[in-house]
Amino acid sequence: MISISGQSSISVVAQLGKNKRALNQAIERLSSGQKINSAKDDAAGQSIGNRMTAQVRGQRQAARNANDGISMALTAEGGLSQINDRLQRVRELTVQGINGTLNLGDTDVIQQEINQNLKEIDRLNEQAKFNGINLLDGSAGKLDIQVGANDADTLPLDLAPPGFSVEALGLKDFTIAGLTEPVTPLNVVTGTAFDIPVVDPDTTLRFDNLALGDPLLVESNTPGYQSGRYTLDQSTGQVYESRVVATPSHDTASGDNRVEVSVGNALYADVEQVDGIDIDSATVSYQNSVADEFDNGRLVATGAQYFIEHDTGAGLEYFAADVTTTPPDEITARARASTGLQPPSFTPVESVNGESTITLDPRNVTVNYTDHEGNRFEDALRQDDEGNYFLKASAGDGDTPGYRSATLVESESMGTLLKTRRGSGDLVIYYQMRQDSATTDVPADQSVVELREVDPEIRIKDPLDPLATLDRAIARIDAKRGQLGATQNRLASAVEQQGEMSRNLVAARSRILDADYAQEASRVTQAQILQQAGTAVLAQANQALDSVLALLE
Image 1: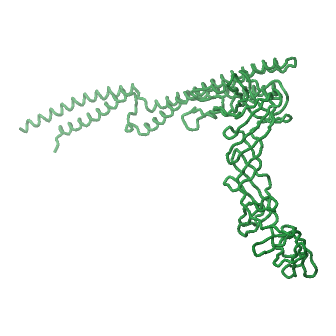
Image 2 (image 1 turned 90 degrees about the vertical axis):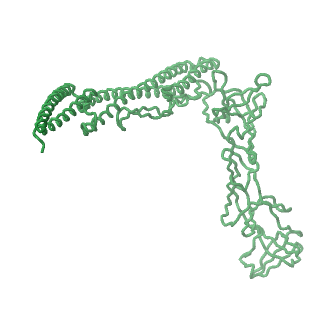
Image 3 (image 1 turned 90 degrees about the horizontal axis):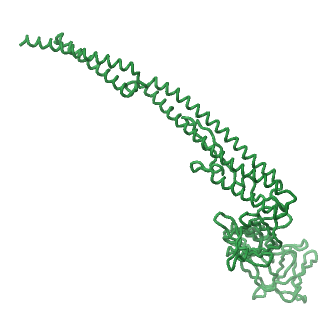
């Protein structure tokens, strides 16, 4: 049985432990500044506060993101402002250059300055970047600026195509003076194809008689037969007169061939009826050219022409014949010549000639070029690393060949033109061309195109409405700048919103997580006093217990 003094000691020790824990918790809160330092302090509060922390940190980063987006939009707008300055100068020069008081030399000088401004526009379009991202050429696309702490909190920054290059602005080959002659790019010419393979994986061979079992295009090598091609049905052995239709063609770009065959009359087909008389039930007499009868004869036909097939014992021979009938059942076939044709033999047709569609590609096309002075340059067509064509089309200095950029175009009234650029001013010059020939060696996959310059240099005005075209380009710049300005305002608003939300959320989180220093300091003082008092009381209780033990001794 525990004495009253023992019970007091135990009670005091328990209270001392409780006070110690309270003191430790208060000291921990004062040292960390946090009311919740562990989930055991307040599990729900810890979870709520942690989510608030994630939102606060996300909102602060989102504000920085929005500021980065503003900087990006400002950089893009700055690039557009410089492009606009170049366009305004080009428009001013265009107004000057289209004045009818200027001669060709004057307009060439103005055109060269215009071209330098256009080249600067292309440079600005390519080099306007933010953190390595191209801003004006359209490659960046639509960017989502993360302006909030959650997935859907984004604002779009539209940097999508077509961009602001000279070509995208509709100013490629912009020329203020010259003929008003529409032209279109020409990358394909038509010529002759030699040795198109008939049986080849790249050849589509089609016979218009779908009833043939196993058709093969063949040709006769037997004297006396008209030169031409035939179709042999290998499943039956029957031969048909044929012709190749829809001119056989070869495409240099794809390597594909097409050969179509029209199947005509069967060669020496059995005759079943003449003038309504069935030949199987008729009396048929076969006569040679002098009316002597053949010992062994059979009536066959090719289309409307009858033939007598005569078995000589050593082989067959064929005579063109005239056929008459005597009702009700007599048929007479008389040969037209005293000598017959030997049965034809055939060899497969391996290749045919036809039309070649030649795509101008330096890998398998040679373009030989002759200028208007008669100078001929072989192996002229070349291609640079950027895919632009150029020609060896001038003698150059000494033995060094001269080169110039070149593109073939098709004009409405002048036919094929060679478009090239001249000098540092990039003047666009045209030369009228004549295609002397174009051939393709299909097995070698090699084409040769002969072009001849027939007229001196030409200039072509492009576009027909230069000032209106420039106004459209400037309007595009204005529209994009306005869009970027509106985006900047929205991003600035997002920065303000995130700041306000972050401040309010921090205050709410503080009420949940932050320690009340006055309250915690009071708790520390209270716990310390209780600790001291408890220690004194415990000492008294222990002293009383010692007295009892002494009496027992």
